[in-house]
Image (tube, rainbow, N blue to C red; front, side, top):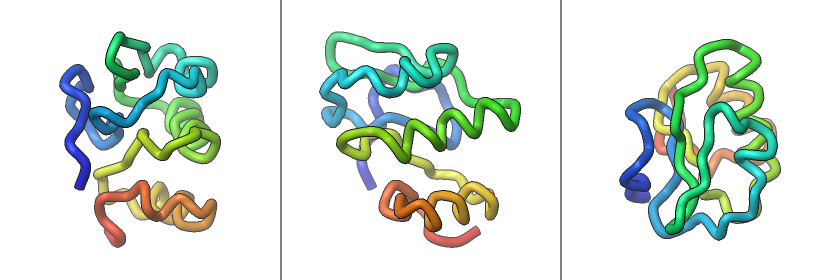
Length: 95
């Protein structure tokens, strides 16, 4: 599993260290959850609402390099990521 960026807040979603090229996708879609930094963006706040989770999932579907990852086990999130072709962004394949 990839190592998380050092500035990620604790939680299920994270940005992998050394992966982000500052494409702008994460903070364009979910500026309340992601923050750019000199060495790549990071998750500054974990999603709490369904709308926020939806925005993170949208980031994961549209990002360039697969740097935003999911290490949780929520069956709904895992299903959405599998169905959208993003299963490789999951650290766990099943809840």
